[in-house]
Length: 111
Image (cartoon, rainbow, N blue to C red; front, side):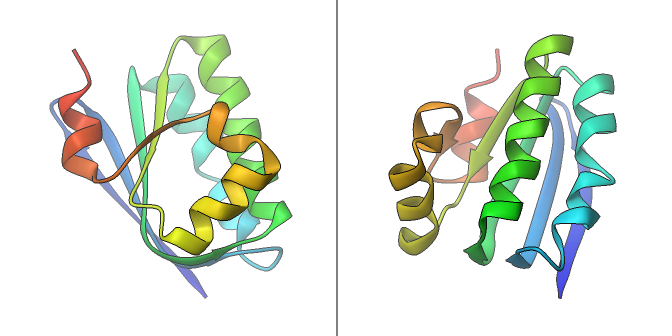
């Protein structure tokens, strides 16, 4: 099971995700992320409460990144656990996203 909590901040929208981002839950994020990157200047996906990301989860994030680029949205990720970061690193996704250690660090980067 996965939960998504949205919080509007002065710097942009924060999507706090908890649980697993896998083939069973990726569609929940897919229902939210594309519309958010279309309507916001900055979106932070906080993954500090996510223990596992599968290829389905990566696909949804990649789709979000493409939508963000097209609409001029700054899509950021934060709080990746070591195991989750390793998935991003091995897949090459670590070079696609702006990844920050904490949500506060990511939000501080928004100018």
